[in-house]
Length: 526
Image (cartoon, rainbow, N blue to C red):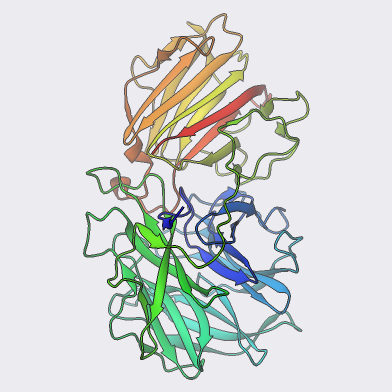
């Protein structure tokens, strides 16, 4: 590899918060309603990244039961000081109308792999908290302030308050230190210090097509802050056809060799359509300092580059995950999340039948509570997904299979079930903006099939589902479906996640009939 290829971390991985500790780089991304909470990635060269750990792995740290879709963990902020890692999180409990019911917490660890502490509650005034460690030893919490009142700017500026590690609470006055530029919607504060200047990096314009990142500075931490006269630092707002869209919400690091790089949000659109079903991804950009102390994208302009000059560091690739997971380990792989609830023995086992993922059916795909789902991110526009399930349903309330899932309102489900008239069968169901449907003709009899193979072939916005009794002879289930439905922007919905590939089971009668999945194969091509 001679350059960094963007997006550097593909699939739903937004709001990257990046730090360097010695020769290691860590990057935390949002996970919203998916458990465990916060995904931390690791690199040694800024070009190759691997998922490393998820620190919020206990319900005592993160209880997502009943969390709304696109609620839960927003924009974590990872920092490091004097041998301790600090992780700020926002846990969003409700986002109805003008209100945001949310709470900001701090967790700490002396090792990036944990154990991480129990959360320390700090405030609820707004989201995107960031903990800055000043060189005089004082610590300051920054977060955007939310104002729900009619006629007010709901993004009411960035506030700052001192944090006392001894008392484990915020102390002293709350100060508004920035209200942003005329771009508006200022959030995602990030701060660093250089040559006596406090630099404040803000996300602006919202997380959609108008997204941007803007830099400001002050000699005093409380301000006043002056904005870069050539703001924003990065944006794609004026280039709607550029391959990387939604550039903004950034974090900046200096390498051990004195080079400067920035992580940022970006998104890829379906060809010819303003839809991003893979979700918001993470890009990497090299920066350069001007003589008067401002940062610019190396090479000029404000657009994120598709290929970026690699830093002067030894290349350090990581082994790729195998295409096929045969579920031979005793725990789920790092690529998987569960939906709102941890993977516990109440509903999931990798040991009861070695070499199989056993799931007990629980609530429907519309539930915000106890679903039985194991899922990984969709990372490619052209790919094939395949699984094999052994499942013997006795009635229509028992289902298991393969889902392409954005949230409870928008998903596709290729499932095995039972019907009084046709017996055991494979059928495609879907939910479009919360409207359940069973497409006409999308049913295949599976009577006598001991094993049911399920497949989804994706080619940009076209999805073709199919099934097989032997993994050799395949039968289409229904017509082509639209991957664009699983995008944040579909029909104007306000979501923040991306498409997941899920294995799931439901038993709406409450008897918890189990399904055994033999493997999950994911072959990404483009």
